[in-house]
Length: 163
Image (cartoon, rainbow, N blue to C red; front, side, top):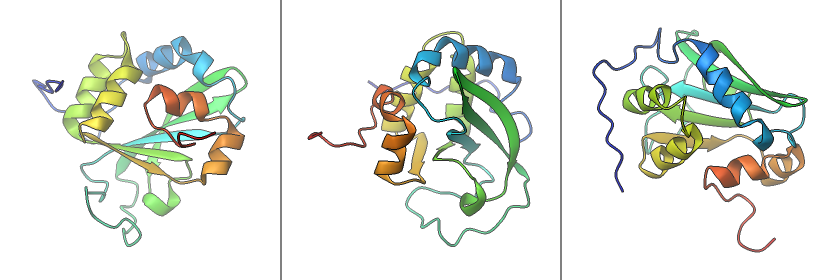
């Protein structure tokens, strides 16, 4: 099933995430997925445009973009996640456990779905290639930090079939 990603006006680097209040409301609604996560565990979302990250390209040689691209960071606290914005200074300095790189149409679709089932949409967008997914920690670090339920919800098996 292909998701239609038609946006009247695609997000720009300045407003790609929009107001954080709807994002926070969505995270609060899904708080049960994050309660097992260690304090400070974090997930980042960056727009593909301007990030320097492209499908099929090696990310190790990417240079700092001087913070011109925003990153939305979800950080675990005792009972859920907090959403915040910060400059994205490059892949190596993202300082998140997981990094999602979304094309403009995916970002617009995510913003439009915040009142509904956003995580299911994110799962479909990953499968369709509209969101690239980077793991910046080892499998054991993610497991110890409590990411299993969140990753399972997104359809991203990281423990394998045999547990």
